[in-house]
Image (tube, rainbow over the protein chains, first blue to last red):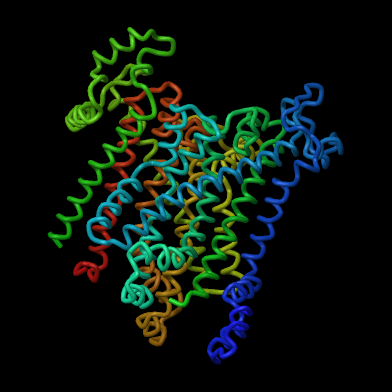
Length: 306
Length: 305
């Protein structure tokens, strides 16, 4: 902005008022700081991401190293616990905190990858349906309606078990299954944007369809896509955990929170913390993401100029 | 109304057809039926023989039409593992899953209605914040983890309920809670926002101005109108519950469709899986169609649209 001002000394008062007014991003941040659930979610999410990404570099234990002489050691707050293993060890004597941190990486990786795949598919279909209307819309709406009817968890279980379960397969299957909400939301948003003046103005100037879709529609549906992406990221984490829990997701010895709960099931009557720790971790991560998603929805809704 | 009805049913039939094709495709593309029939380690010659005799060497569209024709006549094939007709197996398990789905739905509504109404009545107060807090937390807890916690609390420590299995109504208590709490949040949010809208409507103000007691206004005028859109959500959620029963039924070894599906996955029992996927999808289509029709019937303003 300063360079523009410098290069055009005869800047109008309008341009100066734009310069003085706080940017939209700054306004958004100012509103966000007053939204307490959002800030709580953001802080929690930041802490979890930091722990999962950086934690393993500082916490030296190997999540795969078994030590059969130190099996099912309870966490440090139990009488039998020790600082050698802060969260204890699992039934094979592997350090539980190390597995928890690495499992967090798996959850975060899956949620990001799944949302990237499903978001791209869903947004493409939704924007196309919303922009072109008519037959394109009819066809895409029909696909959405039919896909909604399918029991997605069961389908995911079936495909993963038939194709063979691995991290990549889980990501691909969930990515291909979870696009629906993106499509539904972007379709409606695109229909609304299409009727707005700036799209008509772009058309009048002679902008091509694709120029309008990429230049006008996509940037303006992005806030809604981001909200759906956050909420779907939480769903992806939950579904992956459920698949891994049923033995059809991430395969051992890779640590995944759902798998850790499954592996601890036969010991849960004696060592309930083996289940409680990954369970609470899952709950906290989903809670943080949902708080951020709900918060973003409020913030974007309050800030929209449409 | 008749025109709407006919159009809606025609659409439902089209969707059902598409769903049947999807269900067929997903299963056929993800696994080899011949291998599932022959078992691991079958020779290539055996596989060829099976493909020829079951018609698996024909092009997929032809196989789909043959399967569709059989299915429409009520022949769902027989289970590869249990060696009985699939229809018999599925009909035997369906009531358990329906019962679980309905009771979970009722449990979810039982929590959601009071929470939603209270949150709307005392909007922006601590009641509202508490209700919203409960829903956000409920949404974040994985169902299978809650199921295990329930087992620890009610079956292991308190010894009130059986750990797993099926047979008596006691076996349904924990699965109902574990499945039902998860559908509470969307209902609560919907009821809350509807109630807020309805409470500011003219007829509610009139009823209040008439001097009717608050309870009468809330129950007779506001809630009745706020609950109409819940019907549509209930249909969607029931479909979701029936599909989501796979996880919960497997945790509790509750002998319904979900548990059958879970076991069929490990046996690679294609006919059973195909039928369950088809049945659950068709149930969803039927439920949403019925709820759409019910909504129009409940709210005549929608008829002209």
